[in-house]
Amino acid sequence: MEKLRLRLYVILEKEPKKGDIACIAVNQILFYLIWINIAAVIIGFFPEIDSKLKIILDYIELVSVIIFSAEYFIRLWVAPFKPPSASSKHSFLSKIPPSLQYVLSPVGLIDLLAIIPFYLQLFVPVFQIIDLRLLRALRMFRLLRVLKLSRYDKSVKMLAKVLDNALQGLANVIEYRDKKSGEHVKRTQLYVEALVDYLLEIKSVYAGELRRLQPDIIMKSMALHDVGKIAIPDRILLKPEKLNDEEYEIMKSHTTQGSQIIHEMGDVNSSLYLRHCADICHCHHERWDGKGYPQKLKEKEIPLAARLAAIADVYDALVCARAYKAAMPYEEAVRIITEGRGTQFDPEITDAFLQIQDRFKEIAEKYK
Image (cartoon, rainbow, N blue to C red; front, side, top):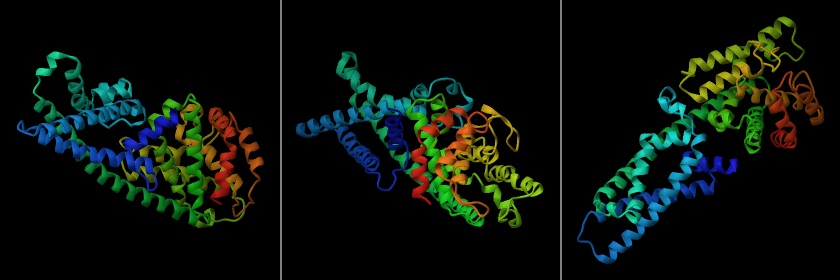
C-alpha cells in the first residue's frame, strides 16, 4: 500500500520520466481535460446555447467534477510525501497533519470550492439557486491556476533537471579522480533507494520520517557524499598503499570539506536537497556507537539520511576492488556489516539490509 501511495504521489506531483507510460498518460489526460473544461465553462456562460449542446456540457461537467474529485482525494492521501513549503515550516500549519495542511492551504481551498458546490446542488435544494455562472467562474479560476502552475512547474523542473545533471557530473568527476568508475555513485544511490523502499514497505519505525525527508531527494543527495575528496591531495587520494596516521587524518577531512562545499552552494535550511547533501557529506562516517568521525555523533544524533548512506558506502567499498585491495566476496561483506549492527550501523537499517541483501548483490553485479 505504501508503494502504491508513493507511486500516486510521483504521478501527480513529479515530472514524468521517459518511458513512464502511466505517469505520462495521467498527466496528458488531466492536461486535455483542463482545456476541454475551460471551453465548456466559456460556452456555459451563454444562456442561448442549443439544448443538445447544453446536455453535452452537463455531461462534461459531471465527468470532470468526478475526475477532479478523485484527484483531490488522492492528493489528500499522498500529502504526507510532499515536503513542507518554506512558509509553512514556521506557521501553525506545521503543527497539523500533512493532509489537513493541504485542505487548509489556499490551493486546497480553491480545489475544494471547485468541486463541493456541484455536489451540494445535487443533494441540497437551497444550493440550486446559486448562479451556475458563479460556480463555473470558480472552476475556471481553478483550471487557469492549474495551467499557470503547470507552466511554472515545468520551467522549475527543467531547471532542477539541469542542476541535477550538473551535480551528478561533478560527482562523477570526483569518482574518476579517485580512480573509481562513476558507477560507484549509481550503485550507492540504488542501495539507498532499495533500503528506503523496504523500510517504507514494512512500515518500519522510520517510515514516517522517511516520507517527510522525501526518499527521492535522499537518493539524489547520495551523488555528492564524497564531494569533499576534491580537496584531498592526489598523493593521499591516489596512494596505492595503506595510509599512515597523518595521511588518514587528512583523508578524514573530506567529510568536513564536503559539508563546507555544500553550504557554499546555498542555504541548507531552506533546501531539503542541500540539507541532505550536507548531512550525508558530514556524517556518513559517523558510527552508531559514537566512535566515528568527524563529530563522534551517536545513534539518532546522526541524521537518518547519513545512517542510510553509511551502509551503502561501506558495502560498496567492501565488494568493489580498490587500488590497495581486491574485491571482497558478497557473503564476507554481509558478515562484516552484520557484525557492525548496533556498533557501526543503525540496528533497524542493518536488519533491513539483511532482508534485501540479494537486491544489493544484484545492483553490485549490474553496475560493476
